[in-house]
Amino acid sequence: MEVHAELPLKLVIRDAATEWQLSFAKEAAVVVLRIGGVSGQATDDGLVLRALTEQALEEAIVAVSSKFPSAVPGRPEVVYLNEPELLEPYARVSVAPVADDCLGDVLLDLGHRRALIEKLIPGDTGKRIEAEVPLVEMFGYKATLGSLSRGRASFILSFSRYVPVHPPHLPPAMRA
Image (cartoon, rainbow, N blue to C red; front, side):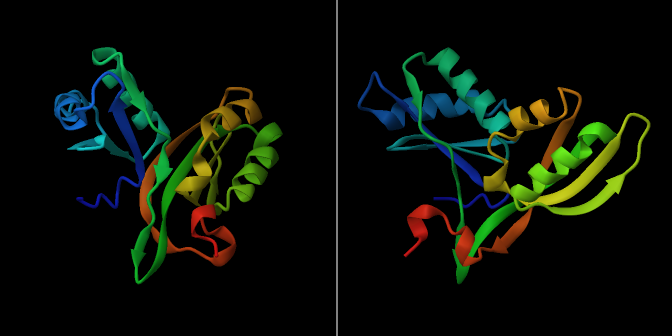
């Protein structure tokens, strides 16, 4: 299988109505071509989607499901690299505008997500937080940020790099 290091989220969609997953996947892959930030590969197991963000995966799932109502998405997973040590994907995140009254809560939440805060940039409507964070820690961040900022802040995520995983942060399936 082709490695998409810059698209470290993976999800497989299967068609519950057929045993012939490769045929379904080839047709579904055409639907995904129109969606930016997502790649699709037809396999015997179904359509393998790769993306950077949950939102991109959700857009692809909606597009495929609208054309193939019996399509069933699997659970998204973060793809780690194994060369010669285990590497996890990190993303750059920019969060703005963050009002002063919720800045502490947003920074604390990012800290719990193992973010490395790089800059706090003042602006007219609040501060912008620039950070780098393990991608696996960003699942569910949209809802959390909306709650912490009372719906006023948003974020932009972009792939940064792969970083060696330290033992306390190994995925559960890889712990001895």
